[in-house]
View: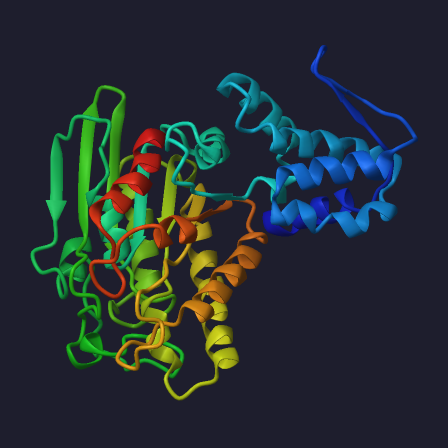
Length: 383
């Protein structure tokens, strides 16, 4: 299992001890037996990364051989913003297998341009110019998708005729003969529960934009998936919307002669999942969410070369009884997703929480257009 291998490599990497100094003149690391702890502490604290700070209390356990690699990996992480792209890519590939956890998450900052920020430099080595981009989510993901500046000439497009109830017609999959009601840990919770084969979310809707050329097809596609697990879109072959969406992705790749290595999947669920928290404790609600996300990601792992998880964004009225969303709960949900993604060797977490808080709300969950334009700019630059 690729995820287990990556995790084992990282565990091995943080069981060691030595020292280093960074020589800016020859762009190399030199090592000494003295000042090990001080130098590592200075580097980690200067970086400011929460993930690196967690290594501080482990320094006494490091062995000389693996601490050398750790020092180099941390130095790459610290210099991300200062390296030009070619140098960065070279260093990234040298260290990412053993020290993948240092590179799997980034914070999308307001003061960094999407084309040259921390997130771009993390993602570019793996996803830049991939042919197939899939976006899975609710109306929030739909707004990111609509703000994309697609870098190719669009030669064809397809959109669902019915935003809420046209999913299965769009993907050309037959409905199940009988719509099976959800279990306690599944959506839909509102509209989709009363209107079978329809989504709870009202304003997303599947759509695809494609560019054909002599070099083959490039395309991006939005698929409405508003829960981590739901039975909105059941077919004769699948039981959940997540299974149906995964089957559709596999079909689209096969149709174009592509493989999972050609695909990037941008994913988020979380806002609607909190509808399932009613009459449940927060801890029970979190267990349901994390369990469902794990199953969902395991499905996507089979068809996505890279999985980019966008953090769930905050809401305006966090204590309004008319809304199920709670910001304190969602911050924990985001932390749990970070832990889950660490088990996947193709998973990346893009944190937009603070960036969203700096924007103006237009309703309880959505923001002014400049927020979506800014985040979409990151993905447009990677396509």
